[in-house]
Amino acid sequence: MKFILGQKLIMSQVFDEKGNQIPVTIVEAGPCQVLQIKTKEKDGYEAIQIGFREIKKKKIGKNKKQKPFKYLREFKGDVSKYKVGQKLEVSIFEEGDTVKVSGTSKGKGFQGGVKRWGFKGGRKTHGGKHYLRTIGSVSSTPVSRVIKGKKMPGRMGTERMTIKNLKITKIDSKESLLMIGGAVPGAKGTLLEIRTLK
Picture 1 (tube, helix red, strand yellow):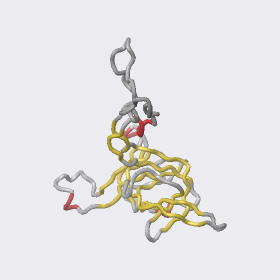
Picture 2 (tube, rainbow, N blue to C red):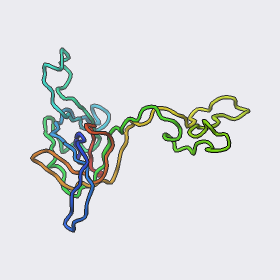
Picture 3 (cartoon, rainbow, N blue to C red):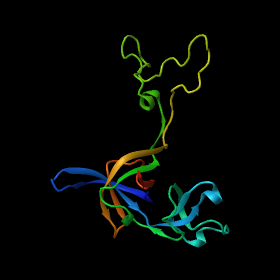
Picture 4 (cartoon, rainbow, N blue to C red):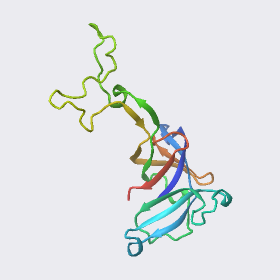
């Protein structure tokens, strides 16, 4: 399994050999550093901890245990191919690799039931003055309370999302850029976890 951390930059487009337009997301990925290797004997599971976006030591403060990276993430999998201090760059991937990308979706604030859940809304005619975007009844007569899990207005977005079966269209090793076909979660600057499916 291959993996790396990156930040979403912009959406763009590229053209293949036949002239077909392919929408892509440009991601600035790596370089990342392997900080810790967790094993079954020591930690109970196998995982590799990597750091992304190195920061200056003077910004860390007095906590000596804190590692000088803005982002730390763990990836479970085979640890035999990795060593502490190893650098991970975009060159570990190949064009055409199928990956899954995880990140935090865009926040949309407090939204009503029509936008959040796709409710039909109320009537538009025959005296329906303020019914158009209401959610309607939220309970039944014998219960006389709102049942847990009822779809209602509330905060929307800012949820962890994973999109599978995306293909790496192009790799720019000099600028540490990955061009991933299709859309990925989040707004510009969102931290993304990119890993192959196997």
